[in-house]
Length: 112
Length: 113
Image: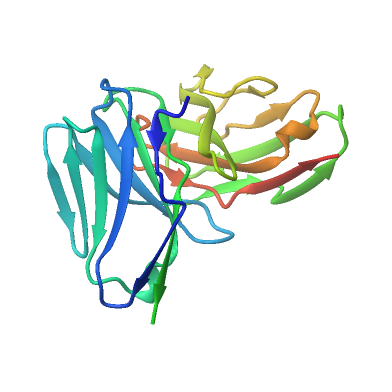
């Protein structure tokens, strides 16, 4: 039973356009959410996070939106660049907890 | 350079032959964790450690053991590997807890025949 779901296995976007990656969760206890990015043959790297007390967090070209009532979060990348091509993992947990649950990942391809 | 190192990077072994994957971090982090990555399943947490001598199960601990005798090291032990443990393994560390920024190692590709 996957508590964190990324229903789009892949996404293809033109350079300069917006990329929107989606994530749904089922456990209403989760109060902290993160996005990690992974390039081939490397470990994941942290991208951006959001606490459940917020509904938006922005860091440069990356913005994460949280809709608690829908148990849904999304990552927006504007503008998308070819170097953004990677696998993006959504993760959720308790802010002061010990475990982290990841989604299956979405492969983003940004075409130049 | 701040980093998490794992060894070996690649390993092919046979069913039942005990193996250890080492993990070391140089950031003085309290929290360390092991994950496995499988197609369609993403990253799943195997074990984590909050501090020296403090370890606990993640979501998929069966068939694995860990130890945390020193702050910097967190080895993953497969006492009797089976083919269903063929996977890509990542070690990670963070300052205090799972939701702090986790720094991941480069991964260990394990094949159990």
